[in-house]
Amino acid sequence: MPSEFRSDSELAREFGARLKRFRVSERGAAMTQQELSRRTGLSQTAISRLETTGLASMMTVIAVLREFRLTDALLEAIPDMSGPSPMELLKGRRQPRQKAYAPRRRKSGRRRG
Image (cartoon, rainbow, N blue to C red; front, side, top):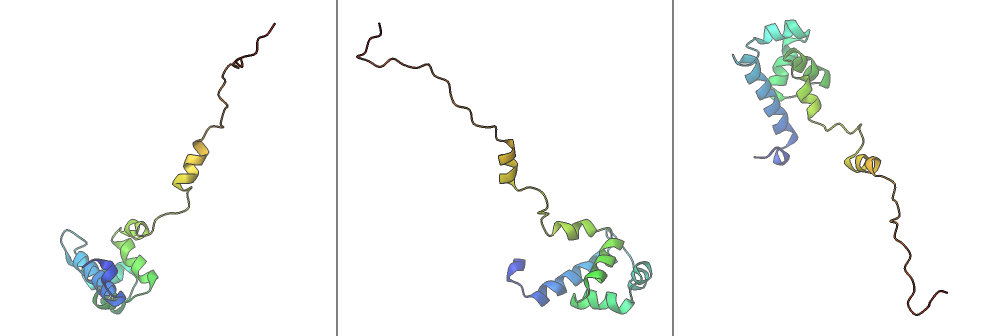
């Protein structure tokens, strides 16, 4: 089911479950809650609560993601809007308009001379 159709608590629980699977996986961090607690300075209770319910402060989530070297993934969740927009970039590249030069045409019916 796409995440936009899940409730907030369902998303939080899924986030916690994924963190736990990463923590225990040999391809992931392969560590115990006690070791993660020691490395992050968080209580084992806070880590357990995060993994089972997904409920934690942002600082707890950041501490765990930092230990797993996943802080870039957190920042990639929200687009960086600090730079110019694509339209602003296009406007900056535009050259000033120049009038096309065309020789004057003679009006028919009138002769010079």
